Image (cartoon, rainbow over all chains, first blue to last red; front, side, top):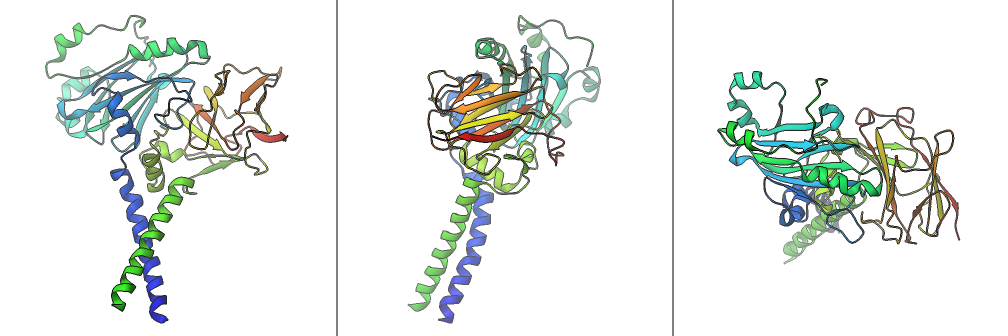
Length: 204
Length: 192
């Protein structure tokens, strides 16, 4: 009898350990997480505008149907990424997630303070390698350190009324998410600037 | 033989208890870091890098992307102010004031987080498209049959979840009380 009681206590205690280990391991072993769901339908280091949230679209739960959503699945092993998002009429935001969906940074159009949200995403090592004088001359550039080499950038534009959804999606389709090559000067000059973007205002 | 049996029993019990607890906590959620205002619950920390392990497990299991803190905050409600579970066959009234935010959206989901089909193709409201009273207040009627004013159809499903997302808002990790974030009231006003 005592032996059975001992077995039950040992089982429950071990169960606690199993519980803690499984909770901590879940983000690593989950196969149906957002990153895995988005992998087949998104391109690497490029912006993909997602289908609007509808009852038939069960890609991810709890998507906001009032928003146009686009995803840039990134891999920084080839170099830092330059992200350019034109700001839509109502509200635009950019959120950064690690490979295991930790939201480590998010910014909206107002905190960016310009008509275009421009960001450089790099790993900490790449940030440290950056020549110092370059950082001074390009004080306008917002540099974000990614805790993981791969991850997701989610771009969202609000359509305050259903009729404005095509416009919000067009804004996101004009955004760019490219790997910066080592000699970026000629490349960047060539890159077409999205048409509806006026010159950045002085206010920051 | 006896020892083997007892060891197996202990291990079996351990995996049942452990995985069962994990399943329950990631399905129902935990009280860790929650902010409850009236019928609404938010977990502002899930949008930051110091998200708790339980929320992380829930998010990866369900395939969600939590809303980042610099973007906004999401409040959910499964029951009305009197703790009665939200029923799609009843008339539910969401009314009152909202916390300061540049925009907000109210969306109706089924219990799995998917939108509910309806002929109107209306799944929620944004703060911009609401019909408001003269004092700026609003009333949203959630019902299966059409209603005057701001009608949000339920499709007649039994249980649903309301999600109110505030975008570009001071509400967040530091918010504690109703005074900082006055959420709208939810009341069941009639059941067939």
